[in-house]
Image (tube, rainbow, N blue to C red; front, side, top):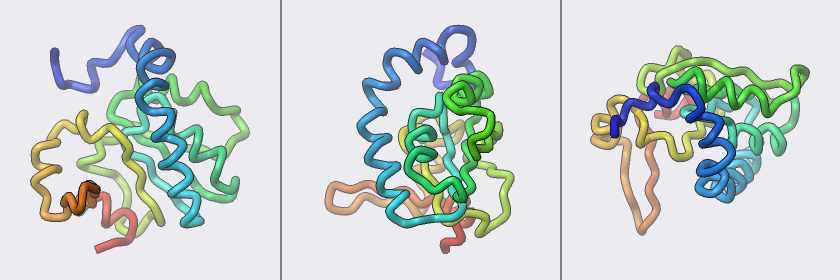
Length: 153
């Protein structure tokens, strides 16, 4: 099996969205969205948004005044995510590589990345980043580029 996430085309994004995605992601999506909403951010970036499971929960829990941008490397996954939103909902979708984000430093108050690190094209480099660590059973990854977009150093 290829680890090329851009190969998730055809019926794969819809099948993932209906089957495996909700089983694996739904509970974590709720938890993640509640954590982010608790910080009351005004600008949120989600990287590796996939089919929008976390994105939907974020939009449901964040005020409509919060700018929410969902990115993914795979356009067909974002196409599925778009279907979860009404045209008048404040959400932006953008094709982007999380390892080379097209946003200026300090563009966001929060950056969310739930499970998609495993699909990053250069995930080994991401995991070797000095900003990644595991403490007391809790993993946190603050890759320099993601941290910079959130205005963190």
